[in-house]
Image 1: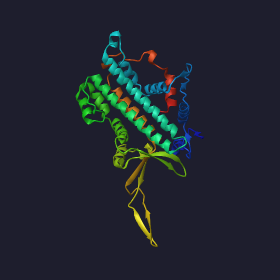
Image 2: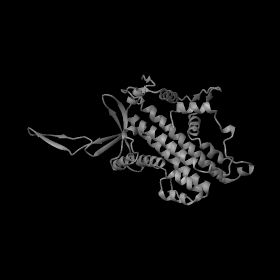
Image 3: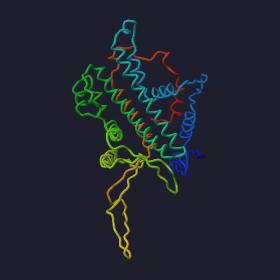
Image 4: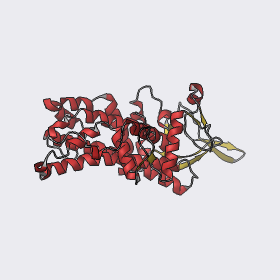
Length: 352
């Protein structure tokens, strides 16, 4: 499948880089490099070649995705370092084990979300079948669960930092939990970060999609038209209204930017013609929305970017020095210099 790489804003505006059969496939240089990275990862190749050093070869995908997660979350160096023992005495302190497990879980969950996102992007570009559609839907669900889990684990680690009692149901989306943080002078900056519009509406959308695992699920469907062939996910009828309200909270952002499409339908009309009956389903924006479909690739890309930005905003508001750990990652835990991080961002294809 060919693609046109260009810097023309007019061309890029008309055809955003989707790389799908039957679409124009017009890409920016940045998108083309990211597509190259995705192709390499689809073949199990994770080597990176920075400018100043030799080839950095991650022996497994897990190493690569962990490095990418740390690169995309700069504050992760602080929370990972804050959970490292400073001396031999700290090694025997069980609290450090608990804190380290929580800190590592955050980056692991983000790494798993990134891996699942790659699976979605790879499979939606291949030959489509009912099995492929189901696999895309399951990977989409898994990415949402992992990303949401990173927020929940960060909330638990935040409670450990400030010595607060946290119930299992407490989360950044719970008004009671945020108010509790706001009442404590030490955590007022954390509450302010959790209460800002960008974080709240990102968590609302993430939660709305993730909550489909608790009820009627997102159903995959292969959509075939004269111009394209792609997998879409149908929002359950019971959640159409709530999902639409959630998208409306993003003022000025059309639903199509999220990869969502509204399908309208009016009252069913019956027509009699020479003794036989036909049925028509009038459609148009003046009629109510009866179906919402989502392109999982587009939606996941957008949500992953906003989710990582919200996660970084929350994590940056926490005073990690309260944990009393080392406070930074030693050289043995680092994976390269700034040139490695630049290539990770470019080939990883996640631009914050």
